[in-house]
Length: 215
Length: 257
Image (tube, each protein chain N blue to C red):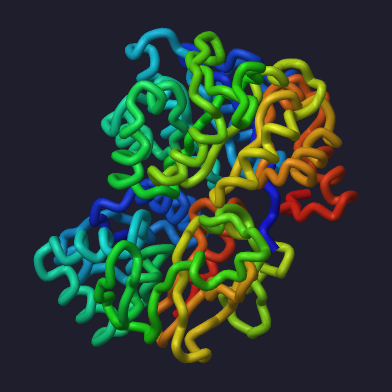
């Protein structure tokens, strides 16, 4: 199995790489993880991870700057149905639009818009923004992603915008921070985590393992 | 519900930890990598490195340390000390740091926080404020100091925090220079003053002596996280002791035991 992490200048790629590498110890020795933005490598990959740190508009701009990257991803993920995981902003840009700094068109792979938490929270609660730190998931669906994971497991979040999903069927679970915030989203072979599995300790490694085990 | 974070801080000088953890099972008590791993295993929610090296040359060893820690600790790493510009930040983030804390450099060059936040995102920019009580200050009663508290400024700590948030800091690491090292508890008044006026999270620092001190600054000071060094290093209290005390007072924690 070749897991490919897309390098488009997003900050936390090394942590994602380290955590996937650690998780792959549990798979056969032919499994490997690479970091690249080479389109041929992406075509060879069995699973694709799109990390993301920074703002929606900045991430989209960086992705579009790499020639034919969006087309290649579409071909591999939408047409060929390769397993795909977007992390944090890497998940948010799956939306139709994002409103961070300016209205920006996303990849439109999962219907919904990425909106400001500040505008959506009830201010009387004085909740801090960013939503930063460890939070649990409201697990109410049977899903292989949750093998060995309970509501006691916590995951590391850091974000000021959230994915306002249009169709409920695309939400696998939420996290609670004043409102329900989609924490794991899904459409067919496409998954997105709002939290950082690479920064979520043992719980994060467990969920990465579960995702790598899917299909 | 979002947990309140417990963050051990490691002071690193020329690649070695200054205050070692007195744990027998630690092979090398002065090795920051070993210590970070231990804290990770013991349930730290984040790890903070504060580099107090004298020269830039020696500071480079920090990149190695951060990079090694990031290979085995899958929790957020904050690195501070001597960060002067975007190039320093870029090097640290590339090494595996998740956040950088900027202290004195922001005072000398107030545009630094904005530049850093615009380039790397607010989630990784922590504004570190070393505040001290000042009688002549009639605004918040606290001023900002630099150089680890050695140099005092006449900048009001509260105004500085508000400006930091405006410029794009994602978090404030607030150290009370009066409480620091006393082990008599955090400065609740200071923490509360700053935390209620900014909408970004505030990490309380300085003065932790007992787990109940953490409870108090979280409950009364409205802090999002607590940072401590010596009470953890010397094995007086474990992270688990602190979290169990927090649970007694119904403060949400990440259960790691």
